[in-house]
Image (cartoon, rainbow, N blue to C red; front, side, top):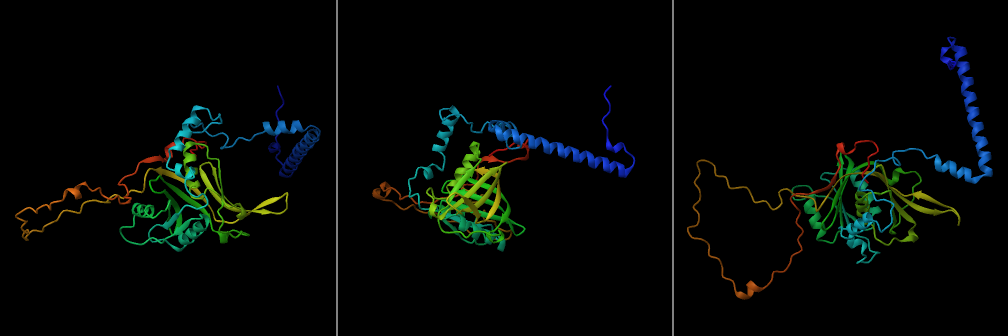
Amino acid sequence: MAPARFQPSSIKNKIKREEVTRKLKKSKNQAKLQKRLDQAKVEANDPAAKKKRISENVPRTLDNTREADPAMLSAAGPSSAQHVEFSNDIASDPFADYFNFTQDPTIPPKVLITTSAKASKGTYEFCDELVGVFPGAEFIRRKKGKGFEMGRIAGWAAGRGYKHLLVVNEDMKKPNAITLVYLPNGPMAYFKLTSIELTKQIYGHARATPHNPELVLNNFSTTLGHNVGRMFQTLFPPLPEFQGRQVVALHNQRDFLFFRRHRYAFRSPEKVALQEIGPRFTLKLRWLKRGLPAVQNFGASPDALEISVGTEELPGPSEETPIPEQDEESEMRPLEPVPVSNPPKDNEYIWRWKPELETTRKTFFL
């Protein structure tokens, strides 16, 4: 029978128990240190052993153990059926015109930035930061009252050459969500907004310049992730101005999109550093819809006339109103098209987050 392992907790004297525990802990740390030193000597003479240890000693994380998703793009060659289907999809998606370079790549797309109704000071400060991030952005304060729904604003912006509508929503006088609409025909995405830090809150921040920044999209591995990444890519001009040394990064990790903006700082011909400009915030996709934002009562007929009891109804016309005659030339003349973009009355979800979709902590969608 194997002897039982000695446990310091079996010692009843407190002082002796603490002393024995301290000696055991010290001996374990010394043995661990000696093992690392011996291993370092071996790897110094044999670099292949170090490479083998690093390749085998890969920690298990939620990122590298995520559940398999059929929408994930595999590492197969471009001739695979999945890549062929994906290439056909992106060639016919709403963002295809941007990537065909039909317009001047140095001109930034126009972005209209506004807020929800009755926004507060903190939301306006965040919108000012966004105007400095996107080169073609313009902020217009949203008016109060009926008639300024998002669908009507999107139609108004599409008729004036804007390519995006960005609406910052707030709750408890703090910005909490962003709705991004691609004009003129959609789609639109809704993101939860958290962890906001303005430029003035970042210690040692750099100053932004009006140059068009570079864009880095990282870790978008599914078809949904590619759609979201391409949507953000259309916010910036295709050709950056490298002399400005500015870079905007959108890093996806566990479906959280971390936004950062930096400037390259060349310390020497061999070394380069990054100086953060700001702002920084985190986004999480909640849904993706087709088309423009819906307006439920757009174009609805007015309510029927109600007649109270005790009043007489006005007599209607005894004869029908004659229809004016039209010439043959006027009937044959085609009507001139009017560029009017009316909002829809309903939207179709492309993707929507639901709690039951996250079966485990290793389930991700972007």
